[in-house]
Image (tube, rainbow, N blue to C red; front, side, top):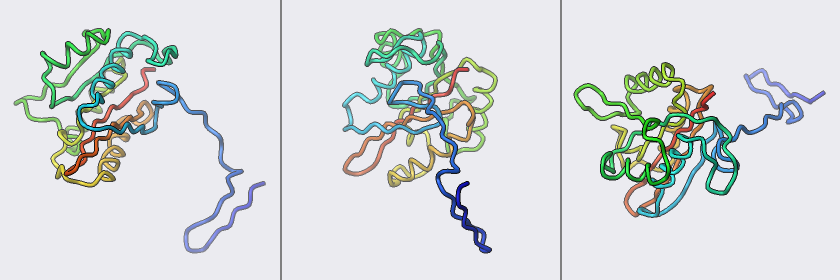
Length: 199
């Protein structure tokens, strides 16, 4: 039996022998896991958005991953939020070139064409309802995250991780996170790909 030390002040110390081991549920083995946050670091222009679109294309067709590993999920739809690249002349051509199925690439259009902000509770509720009502959505890409926040874009990198924690609670039983982080001389820009289990 594990040893537990308690305090009348509301805390206790537990041995790790009392912790139940849980296997990681991989989406892309060794890179992206459901319920986890994965960080990719690189300079601007090095291809982080291309990587997320490649993941989206593979997810949309049920193909294997770049290292040759087989698909660990069935074919699903991808919901994308992107502001830096044009949908028609950049995102769609790149997605098709990566072998994606355009029928499985989706976006949300808000009335009045207002931006979609992930630090807005109303917008998070829209995302929750969309993913709940469309269970075949298996991946959500947000590129970049700071363009989808009303908060100051000069925030420290740790603030980006805090925002990622908020997003994880949108649909937690089905959700995992991948964050692509770009560090520049004046700010931190974050590209976030949320990978939702397509069960």
